Structure formats: C-alpha cells, structure tokens
Length: 149
Image (cartoon, rainbow, N blue to C red):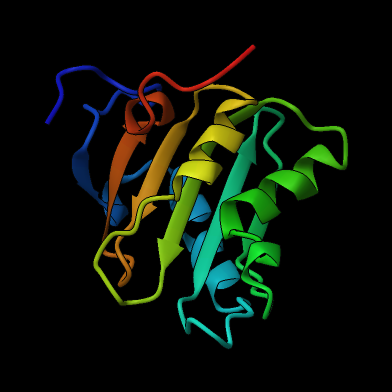
C-alpha cells in the first residue's frame, strides 16, 4: 500500500468497508451497482457499472454496452463520462466502478483510465462485487506516466 493519500484522505490502494464511507461516496457505490444491472453484455457476460460524481454534486451513471464488432463496445466508465461531458460537465470529484462477480475487484481498463484523466486526476473507488468494500486510489496512480498535451 502506497503512503500517498488520495483526495478523500485514504492511502492509495487501501481497502475500506463500504459502511464507513462518507454518504456521497456510499451513494456513488450504490449507484454504480444499479448501473451494473443495466449492462448490455451478451457476449462476455461481464457486467460493469460506473457512477461519476461531478464537482457540482450531480452523478452520472453508465454501464458497459457490447457490440458484436468488439471495437464498438463502450465501457461503463466512458459511458458515464460521455453522458456528463455531453451535458457540459467537465470537472469531476470521484468515480465508483463495479463489475460482476468474476473477481472481487475489477479496475478500469487502460483506455478508461486515460480517458478519465483527460478531465482530471480524480479519486476512484473500485467496488468489491458484493458491495462490502472498496479499494480507493487516486486515478493517476493506476496509470503512471499518462499522456496529456
């Protein structure tokens, strides 16, 4: 576990019980799970949900949407971000991401990490598939040496 603290005061990589999170993050976790239930993933059967907290307090949710032409598939994190961005929102505080029970914790893919970093180095709460806890990171710690102009 790294010694640096993320913007919510947790050490990067720490596992936190969901019931001990502040209310806005606990709701973000719950919203990500609701979004996961809406995933369209007939090929992989790998449901993912995300909830993105904007600086203005609004929450934008997204799920993964698969396409038989795999390149057309959109991840949950980017779905949530594109919804917010298309409504003029550009500043974010945090994102919660949860996947189906293939593994306990599933971090965002590299494309999603880079995409989200385009809009700031936010806190990410990677939710255990049973919602009992989260692993928390500052997004840049998951993609060191990320690309920006």
